Amino acid sequence: MESNKKYVIGLDFGTDSCRALVVDVRNGHEMATGVSFYPRWKAGLYCDAHSNRYRQHPLDYIESMTEAVHVALSNLADGEVASVCGLCFDTTGSTPALTDSEGMPLALQPEFSEEPDAMFILWKDHTAVREAEQINALIKERNLNYLLYEGGTYSSEWVWSKILHVINTNVAIKNAAYAWVEHCDWMTGLVTGNTKPEQIFRSRCAAGHKAMWHESWGLPCAEVLSELNPSLAEMLPHLFTQTHTSDTVAGTLTAEWAGKLGLPEGIAVAVGALDAHMGAVGASVAPGVLTRIIGTSTCDIMVAEKTEIAGRCIKGICGQVDGSVLPGFIGFEAGQSAFGDIYAWFKKMLAWPLKNIPDGEEKQKVLDGMLVELTREAQAVEPSEDSVVALDWMNGRRTPDADQNVKGAIAGLTLGSTAPEVFRALVEATAFGSRRIVEHMKRQGLRIDSVNAIGGISKKAPFVMQTLADVLDMPIRVVRSEQTCALGAAMFAAVAAGIYPDISEATKHMGSDIEAEYQPDKKRSLVYEKLYKKYLELTDFTK
Image (cartoon, rainbow, N blue to C red; front, side):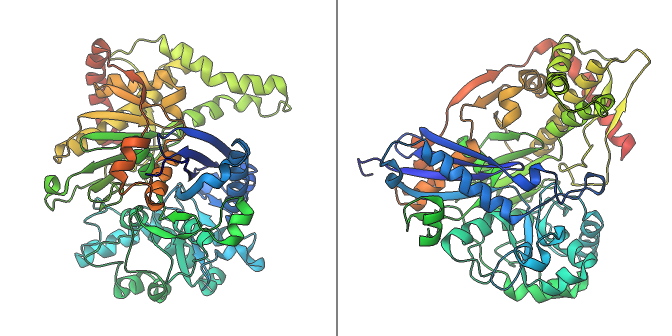
């Protein structure tokens, strides 16, 4: 490696905002960060929570990326911007959009600029539950292999369900659509000047986990897609047969985007991936280590040696894909459809009496302090066999066995139950859901020796993290980096820029260390053994 200074940028597109992280390739030091919240999303545009519709305008991504990069670069010393030599994207997923023949999302056309169906369909959008059921029924009826590596069940959160729903319900969009693109692939194509659907570099991670792509068959065949809707089959020739791991160079930064972002022209751009998978890389994922990305929802990411898996298909998870996390390893994804969102829901419900009070400093102080006070009181409640028990399916179930039709529940309430007791039950429910995933994966032979945690909740909610350690009866290590997903993307950018020969070497120099560790409380773990059995009984009762 050259001795002079070299920086790379990881661009992390989360649910609410874009983060640009500038990293020193020599040591992983995070030099500067810029954050920009999506303006239209923040204003609540194009979404309808009652119908589970969550859409994001492509202009939100473009504008926030530009602002985040400029903010990050403004924190560098004079002359340091010229040291940036590569970048890489990670995004939520599956977050697809229908495009025209140039690969531009239809919402960028004037006639569709305010049409939600022309925008990116966010990962948490559950409008396609019926379409997911249709896809699952057809594949099982035909006894096809397309779900072998998808855990056995296709989800309404994934691309084919979402695209099918839009073309089933919106004739104008169906007629205008030429192809579809995942958010992580579109960002890469946009800044390299290569968005044409037939040519754009497609992420192995996104395609393998969300689009039923596998190297032995590619995408689902035209016959099957046509039976779902002929328009899907018409798109197939405009899509892809090959995918790429994130150590691949997708292109270089164009002069146009170099000017817009204030970066050097021609720097390397790596193939993007989904945020949770990049986060696991930033957290130095390795065989036997379960990486939990804990935020509004959770993603659980693992890798295993190919010889360890030996052709087995792990059932009931979100997917297993060769090279999706680390090239040369099998990547696995599981997770919960809601985690922090459940706490936010409870806070919102308790705040209902405040709805007619004018917004102001005092009202905001009450709202901001509500979860803090609930947490303080809930921590003082010792768990017992008679505690309230809740089920964490308020946004459906992602793993095991994806099902967005199931609902949450709270059992064991009495007239003496208090808000802190219910809040504690909700925290325990999210931990029980986590344990069910761990046990499900272990039963199928996946080795889990330790747990690493990243994401906002791992940093800000020690009560939640301690409860999780108690329920899992395992130590949980919190990774130090505040921007682990962006750090993982930056590490792949360093490989694409030729700084390191592979991601393994980049990890040695750039991976983050551990800042905290939660050890299980053995006394509480024994109580949680009994409460967990009640949780499982509740899952059986509410199916």
